[in-house]
Length: 228
Ligand code: 0O2
Image 1 (cartoon, protein in one colour):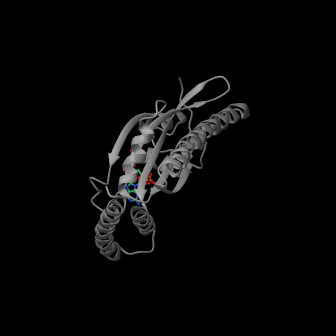
Image 2 (cartoon, rainbow, N blue to C red):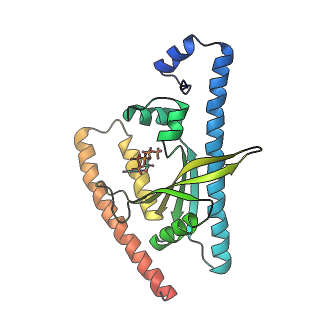
Image 3 (cartoon, rainbow, N blue to C red):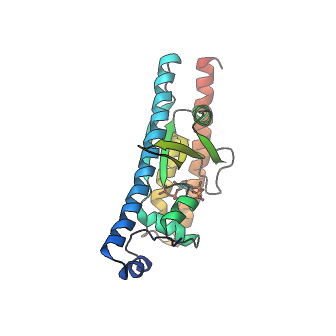
């Protein structure tokens, strides 16, 4: 079967579409819209799961492990960039097969223990299938990045079918979140020169170590208060 490209500004897509009829183009666009809708529905499903856990924890444990939940659908530009970087085809089939993070949920927690607790509660649910777990808390990235990443598959129920959709879940503490946001902003700041970038990389690594110590101290304080 011929694979269809996603619609974006790229030359390949333009030349692919050049000889197509209006109805063929409309069908391709419709397929892209449908796929994105599935990812959006999957985000709702996973977000609801965390909201339910949040309700349960505040009811039965009188505490709330969740400080905030954010979700995002990967933009076509970043989808294209990731596929190109990996030399993968720019098609809807390729997106579904090769990209795990088109639908993304980020859960910000109060304490490191809460991250593992919530991750465990999620993957134990019988409609959730854990595909991959990357623990950048136990093994931080060389630049200091910490977070727990889960790739899960969940079903979304449509009128006449059930679709299995992949979602990337990132769980982190407030300290990890503020570090990652700053690092992300620095990385995409084009006006910063090479020398300054390398200096900020060292400073960021130091900040990551401080933020790790902060998380450990905060966790210890909570353990003392709660008598763990
Ligand atoms: P955006 O804008 O957040 O979407 P995979 O996704 O498993 O196929 P990848 O991309 O190597 O392969 O996965 P990884 O390392 O788990 O990272 C995925 C996402 O984690 C990134 O998405 C970021 O959101 C976040 N992340 C990973 N490393 C870093 C880091 O060093 N700094 C910051 N700030 N975030 C990081 P995207 O697609 O890069 O971006």
